[in-house]
Length: 115
Image 1 (cartoon, rainbow, N blue to C red):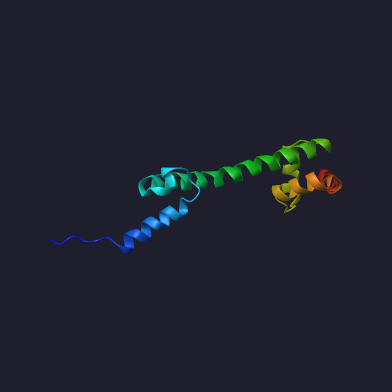
Image 2: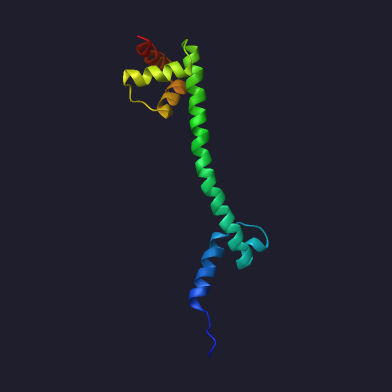
C-alpha cells in the first residue's frame, strides 16, 4: 500500500491551531502538540470565565442595591419583594446602575415602592 502524504489538509489544521496559540510562551506556540493541549485548556478556562463573570456581576449588583436600599431604610430582600409585587419591570443591573450613579432616582423608586 502506498504512503499517503498528509499535505494541505493536515498543514491547514496545524496552522489554524498554531495561529490561535499566538502569544503563548516557548514550545506552547511553536510545537503543534503542546499548542493544541494548551489551547484546549485555554478555551475551556475562557468558557468557565464567561460563566464566572456573569455570577460576579450579579453579586456586585446585589451588593449595590443592598447598600442603597439600606440607605433608604429597608433591606435588600424587602425592597426587591416590593419591587416585584408592585410590578415594576426593572432588572438588577439597571437598579444597581441607578443606585450607583443617581441616588435621588433610586430613592424615589424606593419611596414609591414603600407606599
